[in-house]
Image 1 (cartoon, one colour):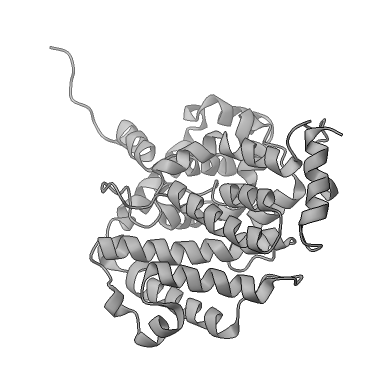
Image 2 (cartoon, rainbow, N blue to C red; image 1 turned 60 degrees about the vertical axis):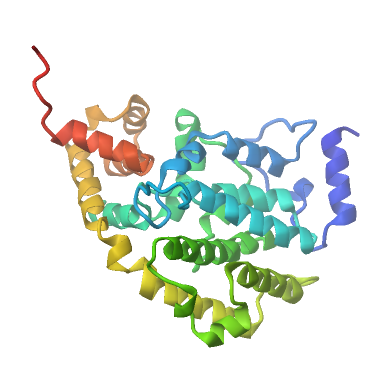
Length: 335
């Protein structure tokens, strides 16, 4: 028995019967030899962590566009907070922590520059539409490794595709990530909004503070404990009705006061227009795309989709750089 096999055996001994066991994975699109050290979900986690798309998350907007302050969240820190919260819950419920981590680290790989503003911009101009959760799956299935994809297991890809609110993950580990994505963005976005002076604790109704807690730390603690208490030993991940209702009310408060707040979003119109101008430019000039994207078109991928692939993969600053390079005149440099 090698190290991987001993890990797999330990999963059967220690994890819940409702957990996703590595040995029982539905496998990969392209079969490949097993690692002698890592389980399939550990390998998936490592592939995502070392991907180019994952590295680019550090310079992509979470809520505040291209933030200059040192302590504002980016799409990368959001991803890490989702992973940490999800792993805490998975460990307490005796579920597969490696699968949870892989899904959490990969769930937002398809996000555009400038967050959901960029997503909306591409969705408006692309004939086939654009959604970040579908793009995250496209990143791991096609775009990484020069068009070969990461060849992840079915369970990880299912969790990535179904992490949005309307998603229906097939595994309990995917259900955990789906909930923790929401829990994380509500709380860290509130923290950033307080730092920006857009909202304060006093804006949270006293009824919510009584139920969930009076600080970010207390609210996270309440939500995590509620999920564990209501899901332990069960075949689904659930919240109590009271806590779920309070969380969704808090989410609505964030949408009303932060996500649509003119102070936080006043630059979004410019960002959307900029990305749409880039879309029109590259649609008319596909020869200006990076070589790997030109090769995707040559392989038969639709040009409009590949243009979205290229733009959605950009960081905030790189998209600004490309816009300036293409559309802004440069000073005459000969002296």
